[in-house]
Every structure is written in structure tokens, then in C-alpha cells.
Image 1 (tube, rainbow, N blue to C red):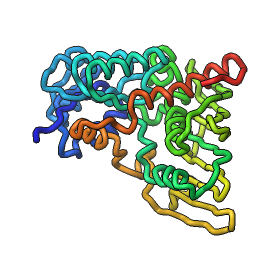
Image 2: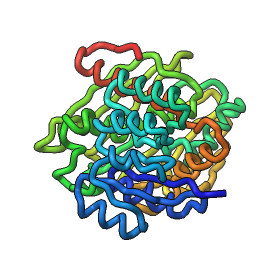
Image 3: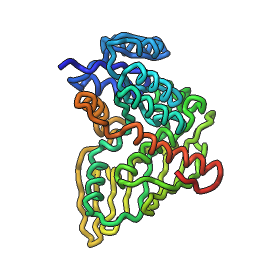
Image 4: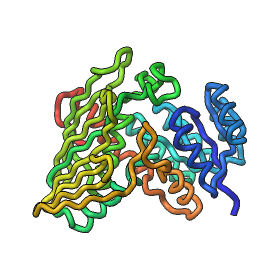
Length: 341
């Protein structure tokens, strides 16, 4: 069988550290085109992966040799680039947050339907072993009724990670639209929806810019969320955790407390009501300090969905549901009211 031929649009850090190496390691995929507005960047990866270099994504999309693309651009370009790619008959794996508005997200979903191509959003937290285990324990009734949760995703900020450092698009509202909530918070809204198997219906949020200077996006947010069955909990997203990254989730249920990614060795700890404690070593989560998983499984899943002609786990519809919670949180902060999702 011939390989799925991939174009990478946007050659910043997420493409460099996640998408490109994972495509390169997938025997059923081949990177044939790379695109970046910074010519040196496009050239560098073109040489590394023996791919054609572009500076204009529309030109790349005209290349009939490209079957599918990864959209790794700043947030504000996710929707226009993804829609253009779908309309050009390419499958699309788009970085999160999928768009900066509900309208754009709807337009992406519609473009995928019209073109009959796959649209997947790169929410990698669903693929982490501890999170899959937690979903299973909740689904099979082991934890009993779920009452509450708290989850956080925070690190020192994108300047240590982004290709452009402190000058990164992450800090510019017209390019990023949302800061820590878009970068990190949306990962957690997606994860909680996946683990709990429920949708969020209401959100209240405080969103601040307190740690970063020379930026007009949020860097610290705390939200209170409520699901359709009445599970309530908190979500914190921050670029102000200066020492150690925090990516933990704790779920409080009738029979047990689940601690996920809260311990350096045991990625799941189940503390039962009767005092029994079960610890699982399932391999770590990917962090920006590397370590953890080297393969997010996102790319492998995307390639497999194309080959098997199956819907990916994180469709555009799923991406939209996770994005809506974040947009509602921003609205709540602005109106100072609890907002319906």
C-alpha cells in the first residue's frame, strides 16, 4: 500500500517536536511538503525530511501529491487554513484550539462534511494511558457516582517552548486570540469531557494577565465547571507555574478518589473509600521538558483513521465542544456572570 503523503503547514515548535518526528516514525506516512512564512525554517525541515518547501500554504494545497496536512499555525489561522485544505481535498489534522470562534469551528466541520475528508483536532490528552484508564474505571462503575473534580495545566509559559521565544505569536491577541486558556485550558476541557463522558453546561471563570508583561492575552485562569448531571469542579490553566509543570487531574467519586498525573512515578492512583490504595505505572504524559511519552499517538491515530476510513476519536464536532467551554469561560469573565455553554 502506498504511504499517506503529508504536508506540514507551520514549522514552529509543535511541528518540530511532535508532528514531524511522529510522521517520520510512522511507516505508513511520508512528509512530502513543508510550509512556513519564515523561509529558513521551511528550508531547514525541507532538507531534514527531503520534502518540498513552501512559503505560501495555498501553493502547498495545490500540490496533488499531498494527501493530508497538519495545521500547526498560530491559532487565528487554524480555521482558514483547515477549511482551504479540506476544500482542496486534503485530510486535516489541526492543532488545538481548533478555531477562535464557534462560527469558524462550524465552518471547519461543514467543510469536512462537504469534502468527505477527515478532520481531526490534536487533543493528545485523550491518548495518555492514565487518562484512558480513568475513563474505563468511571465507565465500568468502579468509582461510583462522580461528585467533583479539580484539574490544572500550567507551566512557565510558551517563551521557553515556542520557536520565537518571548516574541512568540502566543502573546499576541490578534494571532492567538486566547492565551493560557487556549493553549492549555482547552486540553483540559477536552480531557474532562472524555473521562467523565458528559458535556459541560455551565461555567464561571476568572481570567487574568498577571505573570507576563507586554502581552494582551490571559496567562492565568481559574474556572468552575458544571456537567449535565451536576458534577462540579475547577479547572486552572496557567503560564505562571514557574518551577514545575502541573498537568494533574483529581476526580472525587462515591467509592474512590482518582489521582491522575499527580505523582512522578504512578500515573494513576486510586484511593478507595475503604482505605485500599491501588497504584498504576502506565508510562508518563508528554511534557515540554520532554521525558514522558515520546509518541503522543495523535499522528498514528490520524493516519490510521485515513487508511481504515474511520472517524477519528477527536472529530471537529468534539473539538468544537471542547472549544465552546473555553469561549464560555472568557464570556463569563467579561460579563461577571455564570455562562451557559
